[in-house]
Image (cartoon, rainbow, N blue to C red; front, side, top):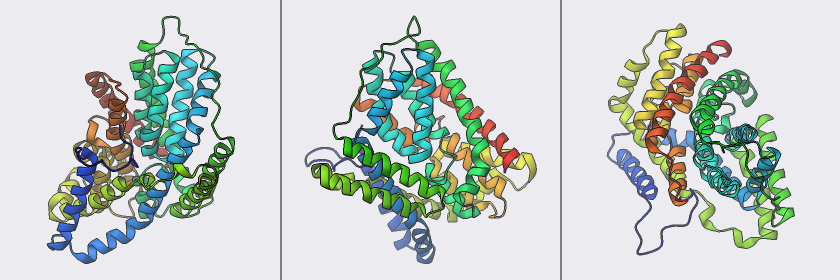
Amino acid sequence: MTAIGDAPTPPGRRPHPLDVIAVGLALAGAACVATGLLPRADAAATLTRILPLLIFLGTVVVLAELTAAAGVFDVLATRMARAARGRWPALFALCVGFAALTTIVLNLDTTAVLLTPVMLALAVTLRTAVAPLAVTTVWLANTASLLLPVSNLTNLLASERIGLDPLAYLGVMWLPQLAAIAVTTVLLWWFWWRRDQPPDGRFPPPPTHRPTDAVLYRTALVACLLFVAAILLGAPVGLASAVATCLLLLGFAIRSPGTLRPALLPWRLLVFVTGLFLVIQTIGVHGLNDLVAWLAGDEGGTSGVLRAGGTGALLANLVNNLPAYLAGEAVLPTGDRQRLLALLVGTNVGPLALPWASLATLLWLERCRAARVRVPLARFLLTSTVLAVLGTLAAVGALLLTG
């Protein structure tokens, strides 16, 4: 699969489908503004709002790409497998924790783009079934993206809208996140790991993996820890990711300048997000907002929170989770924190029933195809639908206790 920051398609070859979608959305958004379907003042306000998010998104993907190039993911995956000491259940628990931690700290697209090939390669090295490790990655890329504002672009929008700093946001979302991961863990074991475990429940531990450049490896670790610490201390997310990325860029400029190339910049993702914001805002003005308002209703209490979460999950599977959140946010009152957070839960945990429901799932599917790994589609869609329903219900229920 082609990563977000891959090089442009060489001349004479077909453009990548995601390139076409990203450019098409950007052109459609520009056309909406040019024709007056979206007033220029509204478009300017939207672009001003998302500029810090784009800075964060661009820099954190570069941070993650260079962290992978420094060997951090490979080292951690190998150490994880060795720590399991050949026991399949122990490997399962460690893989769940690894995927969840990557998603929480570096966001869900990082997990889909960079952790997927590591997990696939690990399965080959261990000579075990590939599907359980692959599904672990994509499920937790979605369901473990609630805990911090940086874990998902929708979280950044929600925390800004509601006015929660990172620690206050964590204080509300820790229990919904725990509930979502708990449901994911149970279903992963029951549907995938249990039935595909080796006959004796054991696998051969891999040899120790050592990074090619120990200095770059340590620099990448320091940069990631600096990023997380800055976020928890309340620094603006764009500033935190930019500083951490600059530190790692400096390390590579000194130790491995050939690694640095323009293709590291995730232009596709930045263009995709910008165009999507403008297009969905235009559609919202011309009827989508009314439909979403009808779906979300206006009642409060438990039923209102559950309805908001269900609306987010339904819309995410129909049109993708980012526009689903934007459409829901446009019709829910700013002061209705619980329903806004329930909508967020639905758009984060719910977009698993259909492949296009989140960009992370599309990127994961593409990675699997590039590695010639085939996950049984019918089984994947059926089990993912079960997770979308049960995970959303569990997380929204937990939100009722903390929000």
